[in-house]
Amino acid sequence: MRLGVLDVGSNTVHLLVVDAHPGARPLPASSHKIELRLAEHLEKDGRVSPAAEESLLRFVRSSLTVGEDLGVEEVIGFATSAVRDAPNGEELLARVRSETGVELHVLGGGDEARLTFLAVRRWFGWSAGRLLVLDIGGGSLEIASGMDELPDVAISLPLGAGRLTRDRLVSDPPAPDEVRAVRKYVRAEVGRVVRDVVRSGQPDRVVGSSKTFRTLARICTPTDPGTLRRADLTEWVPRLAAMPEAERAELPGVSVGRARQILAGALVAEAAMELLGAESMQISPWALREGVILRRLDDMMSAAGPGF
Image 1 (spheres, rainbow, N blue to C red):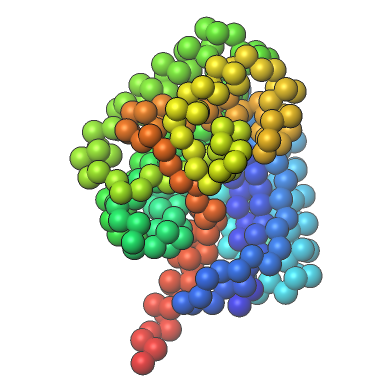
Image 2 (cartoon, one colour):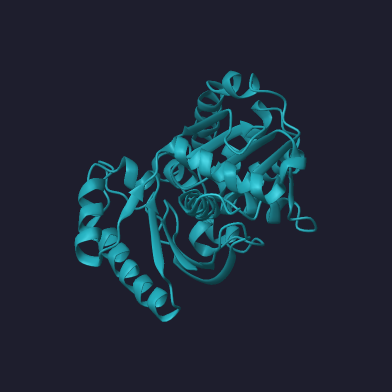
């Protein structure tokens, strides 16, 4: 069947159309997205602004048209931390449902971590052993670790690149005091959960998913963008901090929309890798969206019952 997955993330709003069948690998057929950057464009009290709300509604409507033209049979919609944490999040979800008919399910932070872990496990397979999976979004950092398809540990921290940029890196380029303060804050937040992650076991493979990690890998190791090494990242952090936004946008793999927040992403990535003892990581092409698709297919198989 042809599925449409509508992902209202803290950075990007994305419709991914896939050909998906139980027991088979989902095959992307089309992609339709905008960089709405909800995590950066919230009002002072955390509410989704009227302008962002209207932009989201326009995109949902256009996504329905795209999906209909492409023969989509079912649209699965979900939203993450920017909507989850917004005081007017429920009102926004109700308006989307009323005006478009699309039901956006809000994922909790632990759900994000578990679904991302599922996608990474299916991508790398059982032979990868114990996985440690890190995912940096616009609003949060997800950490998950385990041997199976369900992680033993699934943690979400409010350390998204967009959130940190909006709240704590206001200058362009940021003042050294701002960078030091963010570095201290991020390391304190990650430090609180290190024991919970480490006691679940030593990982056989560390994996980074999300656009932030993919971008950092392209910046730090352009000849091997499937790998991110902490030593290279540590060299790049002060360079990114010294660059204005326009200069960062000229780096490989950095879009204009993400140039402002890539420094915050680098500070979070460096802290998480160092405190969790990861010298390097592999980059996964699959992340939360694919996890949502895989879970839907698993549910379809369960409903169908045994096939023998």
